[in-house]
Image (cartoon, rainbow, N blue to C red; front, side, top):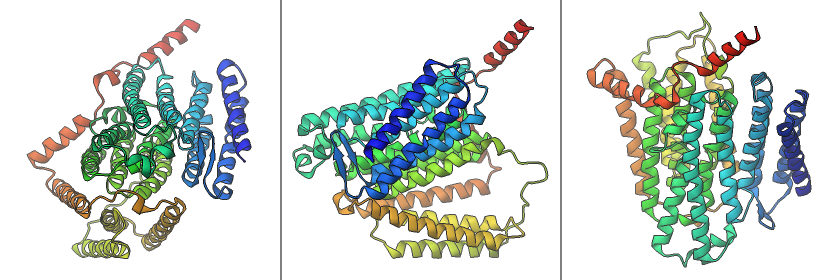
Length: 499
């Protein structure tokens, strides 16, 4: 099984290198390249189903989470590259996109299969800089070059932080193996300031690729990247921060670091939510939504719900990849806009009661589970919003409500099943105090009430200034904007030369 996976990876690397060295190969070669991506998917799926217990082979470690992430990343990579065959056709560097897409997704999957701190540091950096190369391929467009430089700077800091963590752990524990360095016996010899320092470096390394405040500018300006690159970015790489924190979760043993991560993530949720409401550009709305979603994932980590964060990143990845790949069809056709109806007070009251009942029921089933209270709040509010949205449809509303309920039930079953498969015992992690979860709960209540008042009084001067601040905040910086598209001018000049 392992040999089959390595042969598949080797074949894809050879095909990609040939495309890179000989750019004049026929277009059908790209179809062969993308077809070979099915081999890692099959290999990872086979390993996930039949590998059983943890397998260690030299610097590699294969367990449930590594196989699951390999299946997830490989499947996303195949879908996005299959989409790119037609979408990117005719581009000047058409074949290079497939080379770097394979490089990025392949190294991202390999990151979670290594048990060596040195290899982990290398694999952490490889997909991040693969994303930089993908962005820089459009070298004739100045905003893309500016964004690539900004991303490269941010990702270098994140990679440097992971390298510092690896070296620090080795000097403190004498172990290069990740499993050995994070064992209870080794960690017991760490001083409190060492644990705190490593934890802060890990938080820094996690929030940068996740586009969290105050390192969010690179993410807000990443709308300049081509749609398949955006899909890879938002479905895979920005999610890596949650996995990083879960991987090193035994190091987070105090409330202060959890509270710091919670505050950073909550600020990011507020910024991302606000920007997604005021932006009219669809891709920028999706980018801001990703910032908020990654904030939610890191809040789950801050509350000790690492398993929920891993499941969150998988479901968010598939959801956001779908939205980006269909972004070209997001403009509604004339005459197909939704009908607006006046919401009666009785209808809103029913929706509120249903949301409260659903949220309370979800929380009461397992109130001791980390982040359960916050999840209940989000589930109940989603139910209230969904009920109000169903009023926009005259036909099929009850069928839509039943479908939403079925999907919610299925997602909960999937969540429970995946939590069981992760084989992670919550008692092995440091459990933040319940007061921290109540603090997060109150923060979200206050934030929701503030947003409600903002929308109720949109005509006031304060609301107008706040609105314009968010619009200005979400706009790209001057280096990322090109008043006159230079590459279009170059194309026109080239066309006139041929004439």
